[in-house]
Image (cartoon, rainbow, N blue to C red; front, top):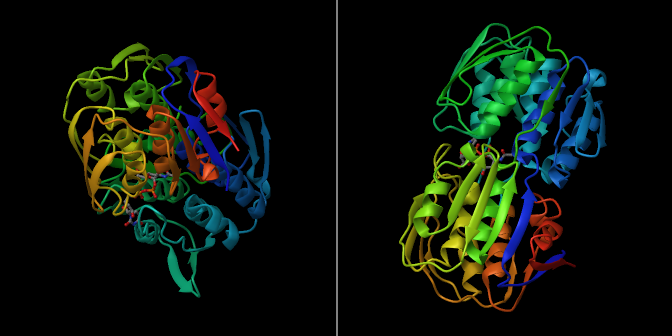
Length: 418
Ligand code: UD1
C-alpha cells in the first residue's frame, strides 16, 4: 500500500476545481444499461471505482471508452446479466447494476457485497424494491439471482431513505410498465442528477429531490449526453482543509446549495465564506479560533452528510471547545477517532458518539486510512499538525480523490505520494 507524506502547518492559497461526483457518476454509468443507443458522460472523475464500473459494463457486453473526462458507453451489445464476482468484491456499487439489468434483460445475477469498515451495509431494501416491481429472487450459494417476465410499476415504501436502493428502483422503474411511486425516498443531489439523466433518456420522473418520487416507465429509452454534477464531498473536504490549516482559497465547481449546514457552521466558528456564485466559493481562514462548541448529527440529505463526518471531526480538533458528533447513518463510522488520537487529539468515542476536545496542538505521526473519507480526514489532520506525518493506505483515499497530492501541492501544501 502506498502512503502520503505530509509536512503540516502550511497556509493554503490559490484555486482548486472540484471534479465530477463519483457517487453521481456510478449510478448514471449503471443506468446506461437501460439506453438503446450510445451515451456520452462529461466530467467523470478518473477513479478506481469508475474504472471498475467500466470493467463491469464491458463484462456485460458494453463498449466503454474514456477520452479525458468524457466517458462514452455503447450499451447496444449488452447480453450478459451476471456481474462478475471479483468485480462485485472490488466495488459494492456494482449492486446498482441489478435494477437496470433486470429491466433490460429480465435477469440479473450478483454476489451479495460484504460488510465494510463503516458497517454491515446489507442490500435487503434494494431487493425488496425490485421485488415490488415484479422480480423473483433466489439465493444460491452466496449469489443472488433475479428474474422477471416484465417489471410492472408499484408502490415502494422504504423504512429509511437509502441512497443506493432509491437509485436502483428508479432505474428499474424507468423501463417498467406503468407508474412506480417511491415513498421515503433519499433526497441527495446524486438522486436528482440520476433522475435528470433518466429523463434525458426518455423516462418521466416527478419529485426527485423530495421523499416522494414517481417514475413513469417507458418501453424504450434512447441516447443522451450528460454532465455529472460537482462532487459535494470532495468540495467540502477541500473547504475543511483550508478552514483547518488556514489559508485563502477559491473552490470552483463547488455546488454551494448541495452542502446545507456546512457554511453556517463554518461562519459561526470564524471561517470567512464568500459565495461568489452558485458554483464558486471563496474561503479565508486564519486556522486559529475562539472557543465555539459544536454539535452535529449525521442524517440523510439535507441533514449533515455522513461522508463528511470524519473530515469535520478532524477540522473540529482546531476549534477550542468540547464538540459532540453523533453518527446516525452507519453503525460503525467513528473508527478514525482512534487514528486521530495518534496526532495528539483528545477524542472519546464509542460506535455512534464522539466527544472532541478541540484546540489542542497536533503533532505529526504515522496513521492508517481505514476507509475513504476517514483517510481524507487523516490527510486534513496532517495538514494541521506540526511536523511530518505519514498516512498509510493511499490507494484507499485515492478511491475518492483524484490526484489529491498534486491538487493540494498546487495550493501550497507540502504533501507527496510514495
Ligand atoms: C451511499 C454513498 C455513500 C454514503 C451513503 C449515505 C454511493 C456510491 N455511496 O451509499 O458514500 O455514505 O450513501 O449517504 O452513492 N441500508 C440497509 N439496507 C439496504 C440499504 C441500506 O440496511 O438495503 C442501510 C445501510 O447499512 C446504512 C443506511 O441504510 O446504514 C444508509 O445506506 P445507503 O443510503 O443505502 O448508502 P449507500 O447507497 O450504500
